[in-house]
Image (cartoon, rainbow, N blue to C red):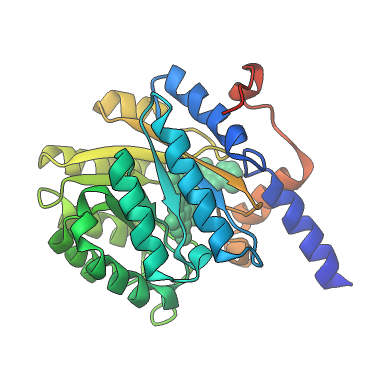
Length: 285
Ligand SMILES: Cc1cc2nc3c(=O)[nH]c(=O)nc-3n(C[C@H](O)[C@H](O)[C@H](O)COP(=O)(O)OP(=O)(O)OC[C@H]3O[C@@H](n4cnc5c(N)ncnc54)[C@H](O)[C@@H]3O)c2cc1C
């Protein structure tokens, strides 16, 4: 009974954080972003029982859809959605390279990290269009930053939705800046993905001061509170637009230790805020 109630609450909260069920729903938000002078990220989210071939075709469909759009957007994928099938990843990267669309790999739970880096090493020839996500909650991310530099792939830094099982005491703000310092001046592209504006400002300032191209990335359904900071620092601003299977972009398990998260859950459950792109007319893709 309690489990069903929890499931229903989470599924309603999650429904607030996707643009809709189809590519066209997400593209509508991306087009709005483009009109505002922002870049975007298109990310199809899979259900637990989604078949890997279906998701593979979905990713390919989105790459082709972006190719026919005239705006700066890349595709973010999850390796579990293609069941860690390297042949599917390689085919996607070939497809992305053909259309010159970047393919970025989201970060999942810590136990998935070693396999992810093995894949990056095998896919090194695609480094120009390949990106990885480094969560600052994990101790290993500093070493992974070094691996990303060696591979020449682009990097997105997040705090991360999963704690580090080997060290739950990692200070994610401190480690975020340590990763930034490691990357600054040594890599070509860093996405600073956070809604923690003071942290974003420090990170972007450090990267820019050493000549590293950087952007501020924010999740489309969370407060878009970094636009002014990105503008002030002269960095592009990019929004991550998820669609497909509903998911929560913050860790509900941290609600017990971070009361703010419990408040966000309540707000997401109770309100469906009107977003600026709801005022524009959707065009099918
Ligand atoms: C572009 C992007 C890509 C991401 N990709 C991944 C990924 O691949 N893997 C992964 O594990 N995680 C990913 N995340 C999620 C990330 O790890 C964090 O869980 C999430 O961004 C919240 O952390 P924060 O850095 O924004 O800081 P927080 O401290 O959680 O939030 C900073 C401030 O933002 C505001 N805020 C944040 N969330 C809410 C909310 N729900 N409601 C109201 N206000 C809020 C508050 O003012 C808060 O003080 C991504 C996040 C972004 C923005």
